Image (cartoon, rainbow, N blue to C red; front, top):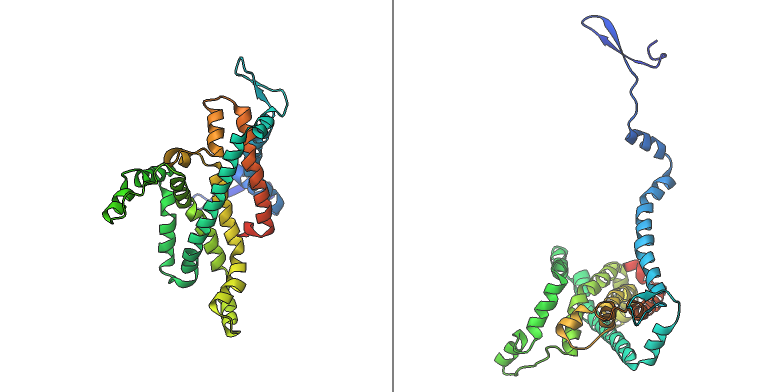
Length: 315
């Protein structure tokens, strides 16, 4: 009877009395759980809305503002940004050969760092993925990513101390009777630092791709009489190509946009240095935005090619 009236009843056994209590109201958490029950699309939408809004507002919004400000200009008298649309910034880049030289130098360094890192990363990644014992693999991978735990500036300053004149490298080569190498504050020093900084980002995608290669394919190649070189060229390398391209994305893109390492261990300017100087000392943000679109355009083409090669599967 009490249940029909919509109330809860509790019986006191000692006194034989029936106590009536008010019906319990569900909490907000229970109401939300009941509303989401049986609605997977609504759950997925609520889960994805915050990151999508964050990416759309912060990332895509900043890129849109960057693209728009590249067509603005700075007033020569007041130094304020004038929102007059024009191609004057791109015309300056096109007519000044210095900006051409800096852009080509940056692209050349990015390509060189990418090739060197792939050559260094592939043997190590292959050893960890296919040769090393299962118990030792976590230790090796930990050693690979351990430099990433320290600050970027700490690692860059450490290499500055090593490569500078009368530094650790010159001291070691002098002790070996080779004399001082003296590569401090040079393009060679910048290349070495870049290769060191981005090497872990190249090793990990290649390792992932090599680990996914079934051992049965390698055994089948050997059973068919293929030599090690043939197996590597016809089986291992094609299957590892997505990981190689994925690793090259990191090294190439990070080199294009970096300006700290060239400032600390070198004397030459890169695209990032031009952008930094125009944003800061020159107070010409529209020109900096226009010049920053060069690596954006390069990476857009690079990512398009990488996507067709299936590199995003290894990211």
